[in-house]
Image 1: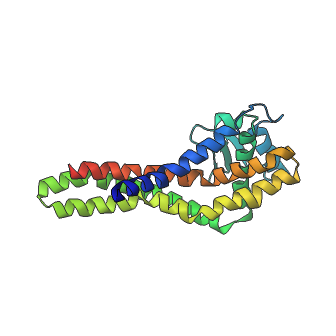
Image 2: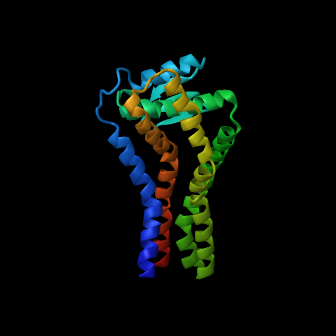
Image 3: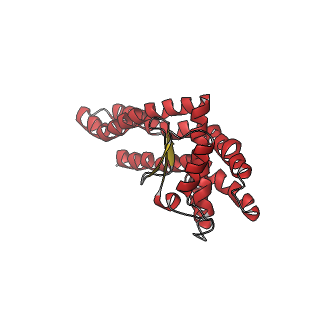
Length: 227
């Protein structure tokens, strides 16, 4: 029973946030024409109102995000052209990051540096995990293989740790930037405001949820190593 409980607990930690985030985003994606303007139009409007005319609003297939290097708010198709509560709320969240960047918000700068650094670390971790079983087999030194696996595990877990450590940046974008903007410009229908808060919370947790799911790669490699 203890093992089963432990497995269920791990599954809840890894899958729970992602499932909740997706349910919230999908729930308020209908009705699709809830608002007169699209997510992209709202993002452009809010950026212009804050003097960020140099920040572009672009369509992407790589997930909603703000790119501080290219100065671009990027939205997926359903947010870019969507008129749902989800579309406009997520757009406002990403504009919140653009405003953080414009204001020189230190935690965002730190997060950006850490994310860039983690990409190389994750690549190294993946490479270590790939070669560790072969090194162990060739050298007939199981301890070396386990050591290399441990190094790979740490590097693949870097993304999760970074997103957890910088979670306050996401909540600042949602509740100190996006929600006040939506209130100031009277964008939301009155009955939608509580739902917008749930959406902004989900937007803040998106990266954490995705990085937790990536931890499944570690379990997969552990299973391979034990064969």
